[in-house]
Image (cartoon, rainbow, N blue to C red; front, side, top):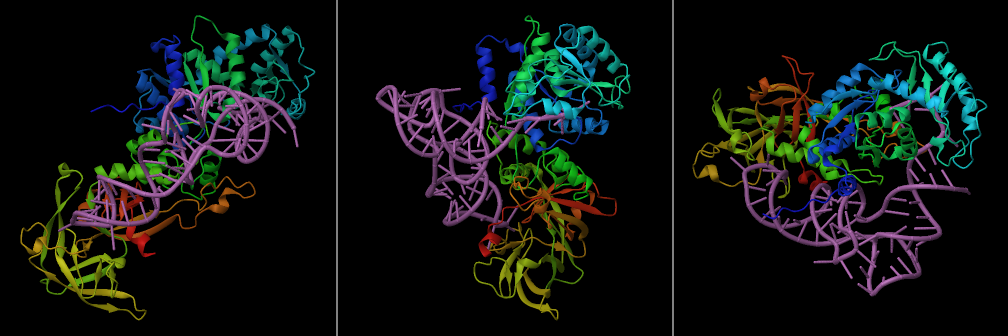
Length: 559
RNA sequence: UGACCUAUGGUGUAAUGGUAGCACUCCGGUUUUUGGUAUCGUCAGUCUAGGUUCGAGUCCUAGUAGGUCAACCA
């Protein structure tokens, strides 16, 4: 009964503190600000769940804002996929906004800043400017253009805007302090000339604001109370604040940037650049390849929104570097699917089994429970006949008593069916078992109520009737990399750790109830794992992805 | 040879100066017509050294380790 109080993460603690210090609760407002230059991944999911979760917790609006200030990298395709992913995760934004919506406002503010003598046009080469910038341990030196007159700056900036200068020839810089210990404060660039088509503003602009100049102002413009980003932006905070200072009206809310550690997952990479590389070099089939840590990849793999949200919740957030064990993610999806996924029988690596005392030509439809974790899931019928497939690894001619499966002279129950006893087997020239001959106890049918039907045998096998089975392609995935943190090795490229066996394609036999399964339908293939229908499925060919195998204490034990 | 951030079981996170807890992983028991699930349990942690304090994972100092910062990227 007693509600256990949930501890707050450090961001929530900051918010509680701000509230306690007089920030009205109605002023709380958050945002998720992706750049539309790639697909979202599980790390973004952490940020999405954090920001939208805060919105839910405090009943505050959350904007989805596209940080689209670099037309060279951004595309509508990414905008669309990001919106889809956020909604799929189950969140609702207050407004969809774009930094590019603020280009005019930003420009107007910039004019004021130039007039205030706090920004200047620099026409040096980027190399020259880099040289003057100094290093983290040495102060920078002033640009010779630093003291242009306001009039000249205004005139030059207008020319930049009017496309009178070439790309790379002129930039507008904030006049701050070339000797500042924080490199970002050494006269950062506010605008550059980019004669590129923008996915939203088209060719309206040929000057584009930089991230720092845009982000804080966008937050301020939208009156975001808490601007949450990842740790690598920590040193941008001084600049964020400096820029907000230039336009801040004390009657309005002043946004505050706060940083948390990005979420890393073991056995994968998370940087957009590297993920893009995997896509472009065709190491994976696309952004939504089921081996990718992208939201779209995880979705196609069979992950549910609930499982991803739960993962973010229990992984938590903090400020230290981390590599979260992918086992935690897998636990989350198994936990959810265990409660929700219908069970079916499929055989991945078949061996033929003949029940010699079962009448030829006879078939029965046996009743099978769809999900013993959820009685409402009901029952279905599965066909049974004289010849069935079982898994190769479920049969051994001889085995010790720890082997609960089928062995010569031993008994086993066929799931939802009869108890059978192995009498003999046929083998090919290599000694591989090609056919198993069994007899069945005709009184032992599951659920028939007879004494024999309740008889205990140690093992229960899944199976499919050969005559009725459907063929399906099953894609079995393993981790994409063999190293826990493939991009952590300074002297090695992350691709050296690619797992050559990350995908295995199997022709499997599945029970006929799966015939009408729809893309993204999720199932438990009993005793094997969770699988979902892939989008490559056609009317003539079913394709399944293995989301995650079931916990397997037998294989571990027998190794 | 600077500034800033971080340091709690194998992993991820709590403990807001007062009993180091939770989850995952691993291992073991029980139940089981899934070697699944459920359930019970075991193992396992405050980077180091000083200091403040009745009391320090928490505060201070120094060290050590890791990370971040010098794109006309975000």
